Image 1 (cartoon, rainbow, N blue to C red):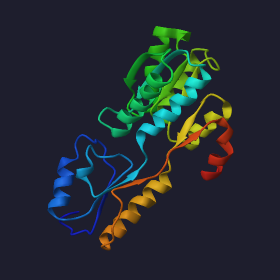
Image 2: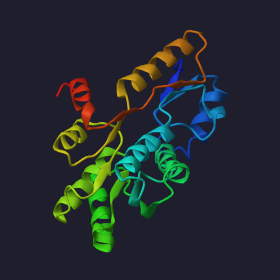
Image 3: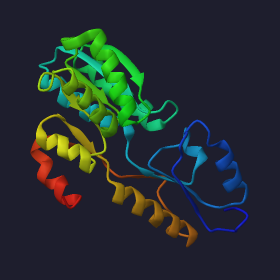
Length: 235
């Protein structure tokens, strides 16, 4: 893109620990660099960031799960891919709520399932074999892993006995939310982030000033909000 002489670069970083080369190439060429969805390690590494504050997703999840558990119980945490800002911060949000609000909730296990449904199912099966119905809730960094956990819970004959929470509010997740197998999810606005990133690129390429950070808020989605987000996806 630098060689092509573009006027702005929008990037969704896969590994937020490995963005230094992107930053250097863009900044050396004096091309505005807009990060979308996943934040870089430092705000010095991009011109503008458009996305959601990842810690909020974890906070929303754990506040809901903690209340449903009555402030006591055992949970397991499924992380997204290691090195992803969203995985790190969503997990931090979950732990923050436990520390500050629900000290009687214990984390039995924590591991990565790399955002993947099949890996989430496999990891859930391992944990269920080890802990059985001692697990009161699966708190997952995204919906895909949560859906994998739901399948494992179903296969173990524990549907309705274990809470599950995800992030993204995908159409597949909404199906599970309506069925009652997914307890909670968090809406991450794809239109707001994508369009916001392009708008920031256009404005910067046009010589306008853009905020260093443009927040696109997460929204908590309990089952009562199903209709709102089903309509968003045209379901």
